[in-house]
Length: 270
Figure: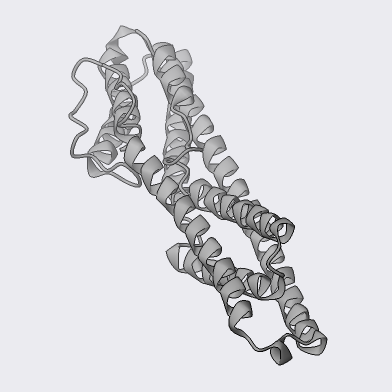
C-alpha cells in the first residue's frame, strides 16, 4: 500500500511537471505564430501587468497552502505521538493493579499491534498472541473492529472493584488515562480529513498553467530564457508535489512513521 501511495504521489509530481511544461511551450509556440503587431511593447506591457497580478496571487496562495498543509502534517504527527504515549501510560497504570488485570493489558497490546499493522501495512507487522486479522480493517479513519476492542478495554476498567483506597486511586487514574486514550484516538482519526481536496489542486494547477502560458508568450526564443523558464517549471512543480504529498500524512514520501506506536507497544511488554 505504501508503494502504491508513493507511485500515486510520483504521478502527481510528473503530471504537474508535464502540465506546466506544456503550458510554457504552448506560450512559446503561440508567440512564434503571432504577427509582430501583437508583440509590440504596449501589448507586452499589458501582458506583463496581468501576468504580474497572476504571479502575485499564485505566490500568495502557494505559500499559504504550503504553510497550512505543513502545519496540518505536524499536528497529525504530534497527535500520533501523543496517542502512543497515552496508550503506554494506560498500560503502565493497569500494570499497577496486579496480575488480575493481565487479560485487559493483553487486549490493549493486541489493540496497539492491530493499529500498527492496519495503519502501516507495508511495514512488518508486530505480533501479539491473539491479535485480530487486520486485512479487513480500514487503513485510515475509524474501524469498527478497533472500536470494539477499545470499548472492551474501557468496559473492563469500569468493572474493576478496588479492594482498598490505594487501589481505588489507581483505578481512578486508569479511568482518566482511558479517557485520554479515547480523546487521542479521535484526534488521530480526524487528522486525516484535510480541508482542501482534489478540486483545489485542480484549480490551482489550472491557474499556474495559465501563468506559465503567459511566461512562454513573453520570453524570446533564447537558450538562457528557456533555461530560466525550465527552472521555474521545476520549482513550482516540486512545490505542488510537496503540497499534495503533505496532505496525505499516512502515505507518500513524507508519511508519518510508526516509530512512536512501536515504542509504545514495546513499553507494554508483560
